[in-house]
Image 1 (cartoon, helix red, strand yellow):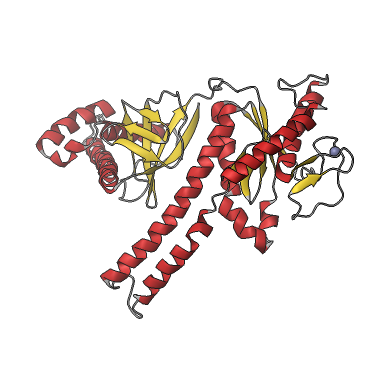
Image 2: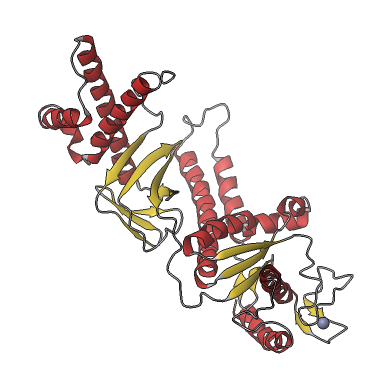
Length: 403
Ligand SMILES: [Zn+2]
């Protein structure tokens, strides 16, 4: 089993309902603890989790009517936690007896029952369908979850089997991915994925909103004391920031899911992002494209869908090598968008050439690992490279012009 934690995107109504759940769980824990302490003082047997829950049900109907809208799982699990805390304290000398919980410290609650996952949404008991910050694994049975708060964010975590997922249609292919600036990614099958660069798109809007907000700012007053108009303008700035982040994340999620789900192996380059970011011209473009995020998402999604992620050494000259004849050029400036080989006459889109090279790296790794030459399932080695690459150039042009 492996556990997964994903951020929940609550609306106000659900956020307060979640807070209510966490509050009830904490209250129940403290309530049970007080009862246990009293029993101990009187020299009686400590009530079990089941005892406490039975008492709680009565208490809920008579006094704690505010807990009616909260799932019964929340207090139930709190009592189980309390029981475990006591058992541990009795078993192990260095573990202290349970203490009362304070508000805002490790707020969390437990839910079980009807839980479903669909795309980037999760259905939870009492809370209903909730949007998540990431796509969730599909075809997984989740029996229970823990919802917890970290700062102002809420997260859901659950366990799922470690097994490889169901193979998909195109699961045998290997794909090379060249990450770029003009296009976010160029795939070795000739497809390209546009870099939306949302920050650049919204830069003017954002600056305008920021200027408006700063005009309305009154010096010498705290953020809370500022005018209503300032608050409104500030909310507008936050909204644009949120939009930028959303566009970027959505685009990346779409690509990484597609790659991980439909290929047996995905090959990317180990980019030295830190080093590249020092180059200011490239920096904003790279960060806008979210290279870090791309790799992070691809890593866990490949695990989900049972595909392999190969990261090729950053010193491998993927751009300078000819994907047709494997000759390596000494010089290739960033301006040269088309790779022209002097040896075999191949003329190919620079990024596509790199993507094919990355893909072929994976193939050669497979060969050397097995010790025997084993042709890959899709014949993308040797002479076929050039021909296929040639027709792919047209595809690339199509993609580029359609973007
Ligand atoms: Zn060549």
